[in-house]
Image 1 (cartoon, rainbow, N blue to C red):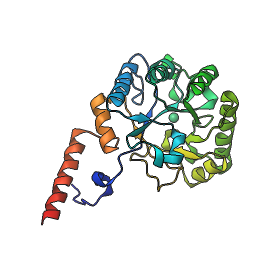
Image 2: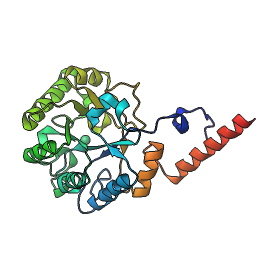
Image 3: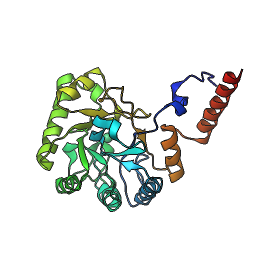
Image 4: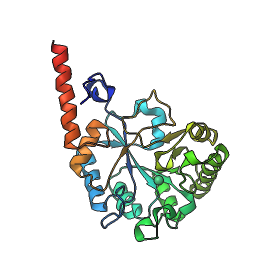
Length: 267
Ligand SMILES: [Zn+2]
C-alpha cells in the first residue's frame, strides 16, 4: 500500500469541495442495459438526496465564472442524448427546479445510438423537438460530436469536422449558442484540445475524476462517473471523495492514509 500521504488526492481538507460534476447517461424506467445508465427511480432518489442536502445545480457553461457559484454546487451532465432522459431526468429536474447540461450526439438525434449495438428502446435518442423544449426550459445543450468517434483515431481536420458540424446543427436546432463539449468515451489527444478551441467552444469535459479546478484548462474539466449500481449512499460518498471508485476497500485505504498522515505529523 502506498504511504505517500502527501498525495493531493487525499488532502481533502485543504480543497474547496465544489463545484463537482457528475456524468450520467441513460435514465430508463426499467433495468439499464448499460452499466453507465441508471434506472429512473434511482435517479429520482439521487435528485431527492441532492435537494435534501441543499446542493445547488448549475449549468456546465456557468463554470466560466465558477468563483461566484455557491460552494455546494453540483453540475449534472448527461452524455449522448438518450430519449429516456426526457421522462427519466428532464421532467424530474424541472419539477425540482434544478438544471443540467446535455451533451448531444447530433448524428443520432431522433434515431438510434448506433455505436451501442442493435436498436432497442434504451438506445433511442432524444428528438430535435425535445431538445428545443429542454433548452427553452433552461437546460443547457452541448455537443458530443456528430458520430461519437474515438477522437484519438481521427486526424485534426476530421476532429474539427465532428466538432464544428455538431455545433452548427445544435445551434440551428435550439436557435442559440453552443459553448460546451464532451469528448466521446472521455478520449482526446493534444489535437482534440487545440481543435475544440478552434471550433469555437468555450469549455470541454473529460471523464477524469476529481474536483473542478479553476487553475486547470477549461478544455479538460473533470467529471465523476455515475454507474447503474450507484445508490444514494454511493452518490453521497462520490460527493465527498470526488472519485469514481468509492468502494469500502478504497475508503478504508483513504482512512488508513489519513491516520498515517496524522501519526507522521505527530512525531
Ligand atoms: Zn458518449
